[in-house]
Length: 202
Image 1 (cartoon, rainbow, N blue to C red):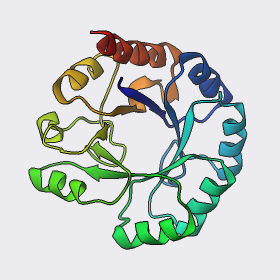
Image 2: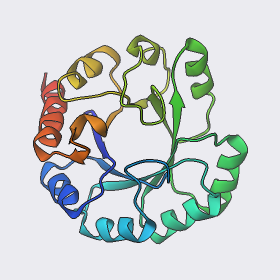
Image 3: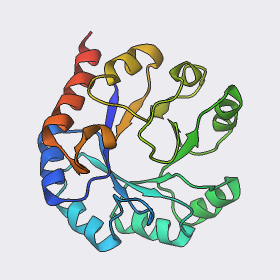
């Protein structure tokens, strides 16, 4: 079954919608330059409202490993998603501080990017078009991956089914594709989850 991650949740209403829809993951963005940025205290409050069984993912860009590890160890998040220039030395330092799993994001433009992603020691890979650009990339490149991966970048309720059929990702990750006027839209969230589950039933 394809896992679902609804990312960039910011409001109690977003969490309530997620609780009703039952995705596998929700994402809190801790990257200060993102318009979806929330602080640690706000994330902890939202996490407290999250239904048991849904994992919380913290999205970071070049944050100090100590900060990431502290949020993981406190249980504010279950996984860390790294979207910056974090390298293997960074991962080694993070693992010294915590044993919680990591999702490492890679911008995919060529087969060389896929090769580089395969070499990562992160527990999970996320293949994306960029750092939250909301644009798709050539999914045939993702199909070259020999490891399971999260697929992100420009996914919507309308195209996620085709993405699943083409490259069979471990999980699909959506943010802008479930928004209206910059805020999460429960109808679009529901349509996205329904489209994924429809593919799983085929």
